[in-house]
Image 1 (cartoon, rainbow, N blue to C red):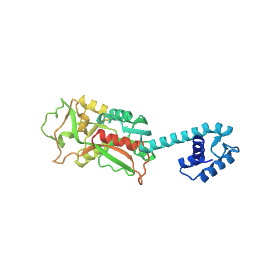
Image 2: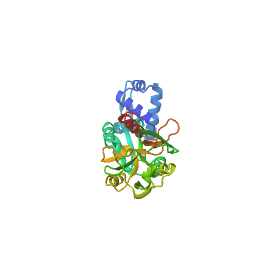
Image 3: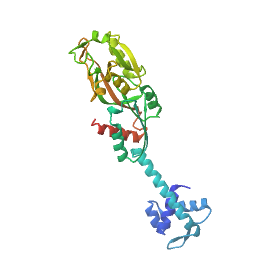
Image 4: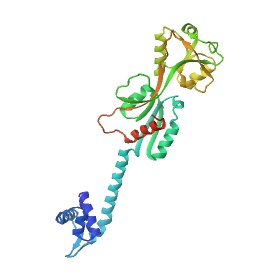
Length: 299
């Protein structure tokens, strides 16, 4: 039994005339008659009572007509659902971001706006570490990830840079170096530092900066959360090298550091997703979400 046969049967039942039904189905009358006879043979019963002027449904045809309409209605609904998935207006996306970076991106507002505009898209959000995110993006268990971006290459992933911030050495407002006009490398040698774990890409960048300037700092505190790190700095427990955006609107001072004229590098936040081959997309809903982020951030 073919869908086309069912469509022709419904047309003939509604038109009560094979010629008009054939015209409606854009087929010659003989073709429609042949298709319906094949359908009747498959079902083992006559669906129409035929006469010279018109056709009428048989008892079997009366029973089959509502079922045939339901089949066609279900097919139409399935086509619409698939079309919606292809255009991104329905489906499922998994969004993830690195722990403690949520304050840098108003993700709840972006998700709220996206969900309002696309109520049939199922959204899942979770936090994780960059090392885990890269593998999850490539596996497809995460569709879009927000994580640090500063010259680190991630083969197999595409990235949209979202923001850049210069690195600064941060101190509490009452730290003895807070009001010094120029803080030298020598000034930093005796200071205690608060760092994130070596598992963080930020820690690798900071270690590289100090190493390139020949500074062996005292890493007295190692934490897993940026908020905890900043609280340590605020309470005067140590200095920290962080992106300047981290201390925005906080009672923490960015020191005027002079490391021999070389500027400190920038740290960035990027939106990542798995690279796609060809023109087909792996998840149209995720494509739509990325476009929504770009519009929200005016990129």
